[in-house]
View 1 (cartoon, rainbow, N blue to C red):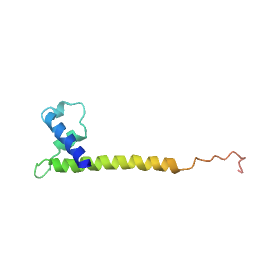
View 2: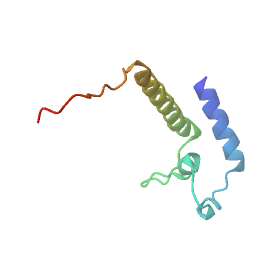
View 3: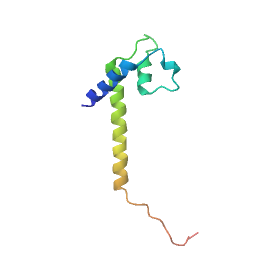
View 4: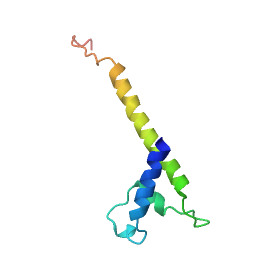
Length: 88
C-alpha cells in the first residue's frame, strides 16, 4: 500500500519536473533532490525504484516517530514539583 502511494507521488511529480529549471527555484524539495541526485563515479541517477525506497523510508520513519512520541506523551505521568523548603 505504501509503495502505491509513493509510486503515485513520484509518477505525478515526474510529469511536471523540469531539470533545467530546478536551479532557478528558491528551494528544492525532497523529490527535487532525489530526481537530481547522481552517482559521483558513474553519473547515473536514481531509478524510480530507488527513489520510492527513499520516500518510503522517509514516510514510515516520520509517521513512526510521531506515533512513538504521542504514545510516550500519553503514558508519561505528569511532572511532579517539590513545594517544600530547601534543605540547603
